[in-house]
Image 1: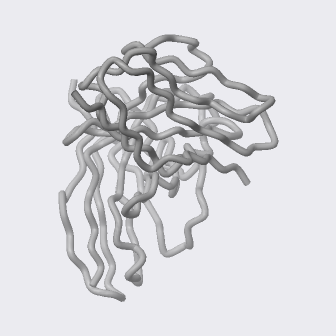
Image 2: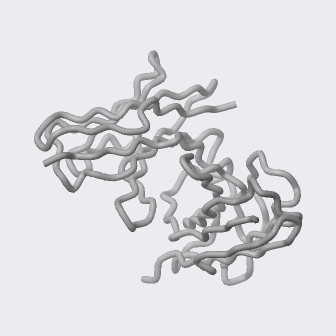
Length: 110
Length: 117
């Protein structure tokens, strides 16, 4: 069965510092990986997906199949990045739903 | 364009009761997924409905059931409620071209907070 692990429940960094949110997964097939974000009092929303290879709000994430990781990075944190971040995996096509990690609460200190 | 809406916002039930949660999908979307999010956990996939039929299910017992209507809105029904069913229930909608279409971005609703006493 697939699994997503986010080892940090809470990550606190200062504004302007680099951010890295860790995500590791286990899945025997070829996964699709995503990062979802939930800002305070807002809905869960898609931040980025690995196949898009985009940079969204300055965030990037690279899928490393050898290390089974999909870490989220941003070189310079901003206060508005404070939010709950969830790594998610899609296995076996769209009908299987997303498997989410437990989430990391990112706090950017001024 | 109207986003995903869910009702009610909050609900309190007692153990053994039955509950129905409702979800209106975003305009133009034909697929609805339901997730359970316990406190301190990530969302966990319950099932997905495409064109009024269940076409994917997570590791949840049969007392979790659902419906999708011709207008693509959906209901989640939970029978014989247990204390561990207390959670935030999220609905997400998307537009799929086929039942096993590759992933299309899911748009989440605000959730229904269910408390079982």
